[in-house]
Length: 93
Image (spheres, rainbow, N blue to C red):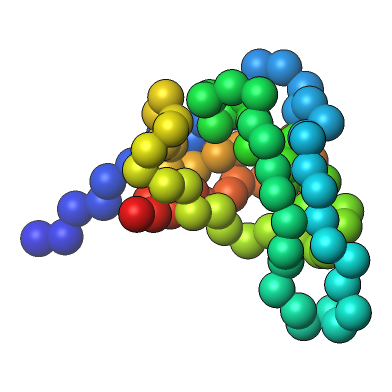
């Protein structure tokens, strides 16, 4: 018998903040992103929506995010981002 696990969707109560972000200019549209991001807290629900929306605007839709195992207060599986639907969050090293 196959069972389906329902993962809760986490959505921030406040609007996304403008991220502290520095990106290298891109010569080609298929180039990898090169840059730095400085989150203001260890709460991914507060920090990631602003980053995702900024990257959406800069480069096009973000389809998933990988979070490292360290440094975050929590690591939700799905994140609701204002105006663009759900974003899967993968667990990284």
